[in-house]
Image (cartoon, each protein chain N blue to C red):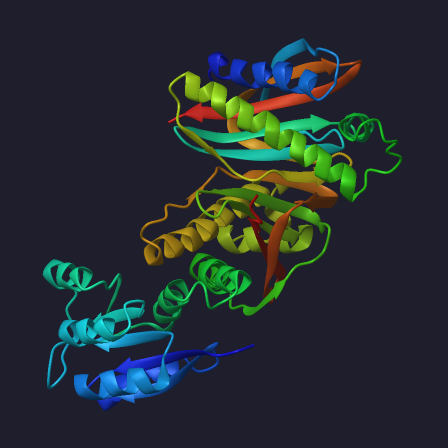
Length: 286
Length: 154
């Protein structure tokens, strides 16, 4: 797949290196690094990046002025402003020259990638945006949630899920996602893992935990984990408001769940008590 | 649990099903259940947010699901409850829920609905509430579709 070109404008070498590092292993490649506004304008014209990260403090002009000059050259330039201070007046001045994205230093790799992906929506496939921006937050939510809830360390895996059915003998907690995009998340584990998980929460032996308590524990945990995932999506995409529905919890042997016309991803957490799966699916739209 | 929230779902069922060529359904039974619905074979869960929170389940036997899918597909015989038939039942749940959502808007309630999740299996327990909820059995040409309505006004 063709890489998407990024130009970094920053007078600090450290910042340029950090931003460059964040983009390694992604679909973005740094095509130019500029130390000041004059270089930025020359390099923009030479390399034609798809997106620019712009520092506020430059030796020969401020980031707003530099962006203005780039916009004069290319009115469709996509620029994300990165500054130590993110105050209302800076954002207002940035908007005046046509900048819509602002990040504060230090920039986390996730925020940077999400923001760049959003800016370059036309250049990056929809599937990739879905995966990077809407599914990866659930990977982090599941991993972080399992650790915070019961101290479980998990090895994580993310794959697209083409199966017609999700299948489990145990418990499946279905939580709907409303807003844009609309979809649903399903947290699943087998009976043995469910009992062991509930035992960890209750600090009891697995055999002393009644089945209903065990599934209630998984249900509440699913609520917390999916809620975390949605919160972190809402943090990045401030214009969207995703919400979660109350859980529906299915218990039994050979549960099969089908969700026709969803693009789904399977997140696996491999833990010492067994695999815990979170399947996240989004509607493919009209 | 509020009985007035049941009607928008029953009305949706009574108006949408005949549009798809089914004879007029009738309300067979209304009763209260606790926490769980007992899966009849095919259960479709749809979640609600905004001014109404909760879940609604369209619960039916696999035979009934096949009967409905066949009718929806212009009488095409449905021997197996396959991907096509599942898609039809999902679509029906979508239409019923969207119609119910419109009825709820008429009551002044702004709601958002999730995508339907269709689960298949014998003897599954479906927990959709922490308390009581209302169930309506709808009779559709001798087949029973159970509507489990566990939504609360926020």
